[in-house]
Image 1 (cartoon, helix red, strand yellow):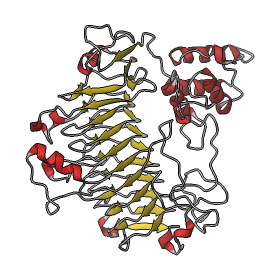
Image 2 (cartoon, helix red, strand yellow; image 1 turned 45 degrees about the vertical axis):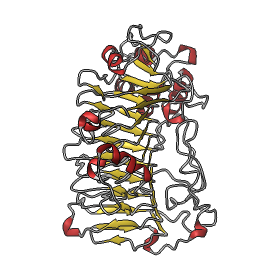
Image 3 (cartoon, helix red, strand yellow; image 1 turned 60 degrees about the vertical axis):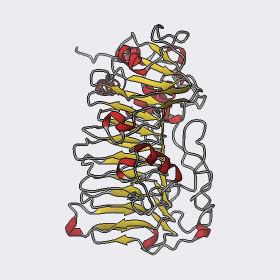
Image 4 (cartoon, helix red, strand yellow; image 1 turned 30 degrees about the vertical axis):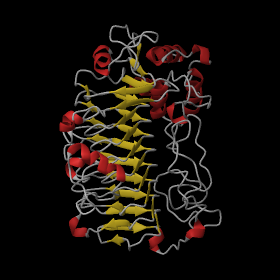
Length: 517
């Protein structure tokens, strides 16, 4: 019992932490004034002013409407949060704020001064949620910080990649975010991706989940030279690298001379190189790009599981020999269907249990090949739209045709592709849906605690009532360690700031000292 006690205390210390008790809520609105006090009834008016005044643990609620901005929002190295007290910059529940940088100087195209939001190295533990960033002259959001969260964000019509992690950025999460129709006139479309996780100094632990990239002038995902590696799961990339009519409008602002002949977009769904980066892709979809999933000179060794290339010019392009790789690439449980050119797999790849390994596939294997809903609005909780697109028909021979790669599955073996035919039912306390109820789920509950409405299971909402509260903690408690004598009802569950002390004290009182002590 004593060992269990100390183990549990360590888990809770790591997951909950000892947080400040003076966290505050502030507000900003398009009609606000910096002469106000930042309260809900008296909101501030500009982001620079607001960010200068919030502290670790605070939440800045961004009210709906359009913010017309002519310069970047820079969050400096001394303006971040801490592990116990992150800073939240969230849209006000039920509202959709738009940060429009269309008034920026045209001289800032392709320059760091033209970014929409710049999060400097050191501005760690920052959570941005529910904002739309558009018309910046460079990246929509650029971050060189650590342990940040970009969630339910839209980046569109910007002058470089919509969201970029660079510098020494590490352990950042991008969740349920859309990045589309970004175009860089300064390079004729060669650099503007949906998500750019790239350059040699990039740290480890960066991840993207539940996100979409489409209509970007270069690639959907570009992980060029990102030595730290990245994890991308349950994300979609389509229609990238095409010359869109609105790109000519952007070009006119820079007096560029864009033509079909000098357009430079690469048109890759998921670009996994060049150089290093032990990337992992799970359950991703790539369709209607030039190359769906392209290794692009990455010799580190990537893993791609349960993913689909559909109707790209070439679905899969792994053109490296074993002598060109430090570690072989591993591809399992994947589908290639309806590509216009033959896929390429050289000796640098280990591939098995994929459709090209002798498992036939045709249109009858899918419930639908119509992507209209997949391109449409997200679900109310911010998750990807639900449709039959690229889901397997009940009589498909791709069902149970895979092998266990460590991802959740039902029945005797995993299905091929991104969707299990039989729905996977996760435990209510398994907030990160990895098949285990553990301390990382408590971290998810802590991060979502206090969300008043619209919360998803992944936010810590165990009972699916839309908010994250003490009841959800009790569900996690029962499933993680039902024998532990913790708090017994939702009313007794304090905020995460004091939860650790309650748990430790309660547990300590229940430990009996052995005889002889």
